[in-house]
Length: 190
Image (tube, rainbow, N blue to C red; front, side, top):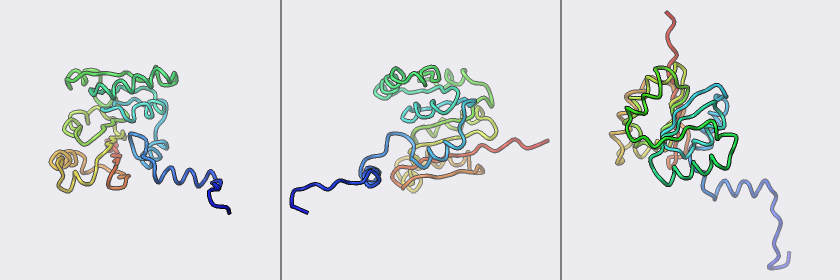
């Protein structure tokens, strides 16, 4: 090969290099999305706090209420809704800062999935657990191991874990970016 001449790369190698060196898309880990892709369906109803994965989630379930208080992320989700007609009617985007007002939108055991983007959402998780149906999914994105082992959110993370300590879960990630999927226990037969 002559110096300065480029060598064509196979598309497989290009995809591999992209995965290794380009950042993941905002939101859940690829592994979490793969797990959820097998479980989500069009009859499901969800609630999401934080919106990095809201559009992705809305495309896979029947309806999603998304609460986003960050104006930049709120604008990003609105822009996505305006571009993507397939999810436009599926997402109700709210900026309600008061959790009691949000809870008024739902009844007990009415949600199939609850998505919380970031460990800072954990203090609210306990309040919303009664809204999950038996067998429902609690998905927490950015639940990093650093928070559990002594980081700034250690108390918050441990508080959340105490609410779901008996639940089955799948932890996906790489210690820098983690998504945890908790499975709400099924109601016991009487």
